[in-house]
Length: 282
Image 1 (tube, rainbow, N blue to C red):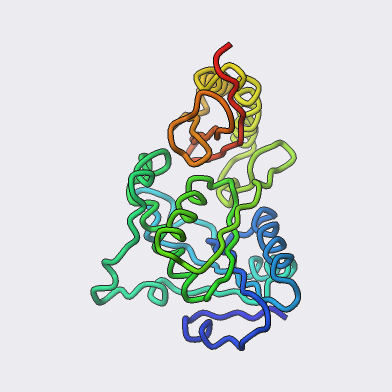
Image 2: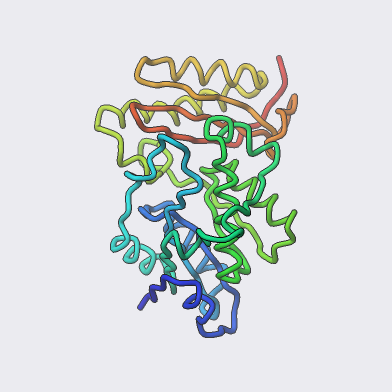
């Protein structure tokens, strides 16, 4: 049976194990994408290892006017999914448990550097400082040997990898492919905000990315033009469409690259990305 802990003391007091510890950090509202991460972690550490899933809606990564208060909190169903996918422990701390809200430590954060102000960071100032700070805390408290993240949040994954390298964190960061619904839309806890009509509109996002992928032989500008055209609908508000190198530096003229976008459907902001291969201008 899965164990549920809420404090750092309980996490630090977990019995020693023979194998490695894998951690899957989440904000809860678990879906099949999270289950795939937990299953990947279970496979990686085997029966001798331990899989810890963290469930924490982190306030420091939400900006003013964002959906912190209404973000879905579904701990009971999260526990069932985590156990079914192979987790041993769920750590579900409070905000006060994660952050020292009184002392100097409360003001200490991880600076994401220039990349943290681009793409998602340009639209959500301070977001990645909140993400990196909480992820560092979760990985250190759980004493993770390996941590699993989804590629849907590709910029987040890139920055977490960079943080682990820069701070010499003794943890391997593993990214797994985006899990998609039958209509191609990337699974996200925020998808539940969409009405039936908005869901139909949102399904144009993966279709647009397919158009961009096909246009990639003609270069980055052709990709952006194709995706923009495919998303031309008054019900879709484009935040950004960009093509970058795989490390999120400027796009190369040809070769492996990443198409990233953010689109608002009603009040719901959705992000997605896909690997593409640029062929250069024809």
